Length: 185
Ligand SMILES: [Zn+2]
Image (tube, rainbow, N blue to C red; front, side):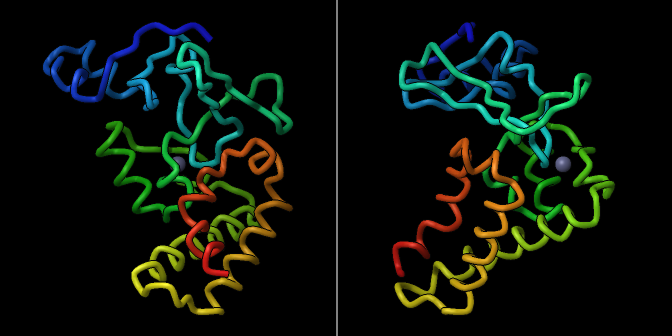
């Protein structure tokens, strides 16, 4: 995808404060080791807490791919989850994070309570597993075996129910929440 703008750092964006353009850049850029990337098309993709696509930034910062590996209907919108933190968070925390960082109230199926019951159960389990992982970290190298078991169950179910997400390595999310426990096994 074409690159529209590359700022050298987040600080550079903050230096543009005040203008509407600066606000749009700040809310639509992607963080990359080379700086903050703004894409002509990818940056226009909306958020959902139940994403059907992910973005992969290439080592060469001029390229990124939007990867949609699940079945998508002809008129279905392609949506990304803007934040790894948001993806596994409970509704209240998702809403708070999205509003403070991006300035909108999410009305996706997960936030509006219109998900299928089986999907509600899955996401609730993943939210609980992520929360327990976070709570376990400050306790040091000794991890409660029941928490490890819970996370393994969550990952196994995740890989079964959301295989397209795992295939795409979008779980960098996985790394954020589960890596510490895996290292301690
Ligand atoms: Zn949402």
